[in-house]
Length: 260
Image (cartoon, rainbow, N blue to C red):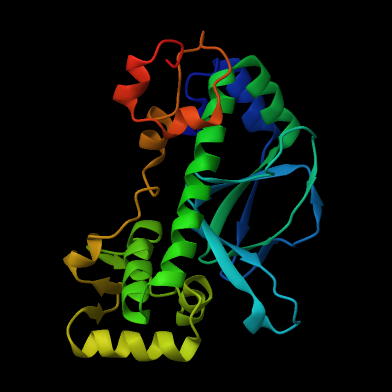
């Protein structure tokens, strides 16, 4: 039985009922998981593989599409609002790698969140972490040189789609990297070839490998799920917490009455 870390502490009968209501689907690389503007009553939880979130530009050409985010194993794609049991997708969800995805009914998650507020807090924490990563990526695109930006994206991919030590899955194409970094395919290709010639990037049958010093980046929001949850999960008897609560360091939260 699939057990997402977020529902570990939910009673077994409720977990089993949730699992029974889910649908597991497999997607090939580049297959569309969910089309923009489509109405859906499901949350998309990645069991394996990697999905990317694509925002479509005004033009009809694929070159105007922008990858805004990645959804990795044990992460969710869901509506920004939980007020209804269905929602209209604002972006397209595409399998960046062959992926297995659980389609979880929104209504079922809403019931669990109502009975177990810590699950709702956990989902909120994950959503806030993701927004932080997206804002950081936008700042990098506007401020960094092409080489620095590509280097940081390559390191991020070693966390999202790891392959061997310090590498990422070679099936992640330069077009995807260009779409996510805000650069042209030609600039990404030229930058990566230059990095290879200087020994900063290496390819083999397992993947694309980057130098260890690429790890000195600012992807602070990309933490394992367990760390994400531990930083935002309050005690069950806590009152509803304001959003700014999650931006406070744990030591400060403990020092402020009513904040923890």
